[in-house]
Image (tube, rainbow, N blue to C red; front, side, top):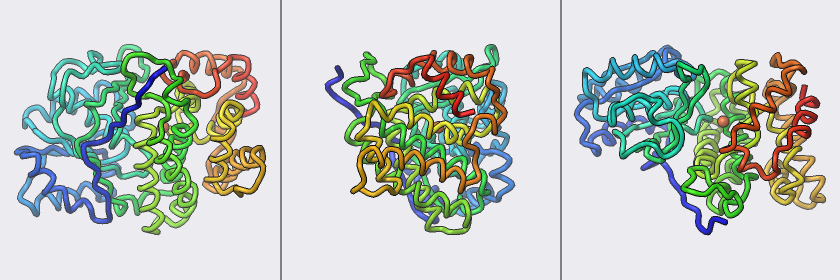
Length: 398
Ligand SMILES: [Fe+2]
């Protein structure tokens, strides 16, 4: 039994409309001489790269720019980005974009700081020391990578996703400017928002840190009083504001509340961890390459259904946070919460059945088997995953 929990975050969180104006002051605080921005072509097309560059130029700073980040970076793109940036020798990196751009920046910062190959650092707690400072500026409300200790890369030998998890990878600054998300298309808003909601709900119902029994110094420790508080607020904020942000993209208040819900969710899950929904989402996504948020959102109500028996009070509270009456019986609040997630998926225009994203019944056994190998996620699940139960659950999800 663990007798203590700990809490880690980005070095600093800066939040507010127009917060990008603060970048020059942040750069000078780190004493950086050469700055590089890592972003992707979509962010450049949307004019957000130009906006950040203009802020820097007005302060007399000419950044080096790498704008070829791709969704879910592969090894070739990591090494290409490193090679391009190394020549100018940056001492501070700005990550501008979704989770993929921020993950790429973390790995590049790691390699520029400590050398070697990404595969040298796969797993947990392999980073030997501090990495160069990163200012992470998310352009979606859903990644969490701006405060998280994880970077994911597709390995070139196995073609599987590999993770580098270390608290040294948490950015020095997470800068959240809701105005950057005003132009985000409805579908991307919906997917990234469902990721943030799923992460908050999984953070909240994850096993209590005292009973995880992982040993060592796990980065994902299970839920604790601090992550509970953050996740509770995140669940309410996201459930309330996501439909508005999707259907009224220019609504700054909804966008701002989504950004706040996202950061609270990220602070919670990047300490407590996520569990079964994410463990199943990876093998599902290998067979149906859909956005991560769409897959976890689809699986969320089924994960809630499976786990409710092992944490009924937590699930009743989730029901309340999603809008169920506190006066209702516990079972009614639990079921009401699950029903509300199904309705939310409908309102957002997202799928709620595996067959809608092209998964077939004959793939379920392999999906379950693969999900059960992801011990670092399954050990946090409140109910011990049992193969036959999960096969039946996913057959109902078809
Ligand atoms: Fe996620």
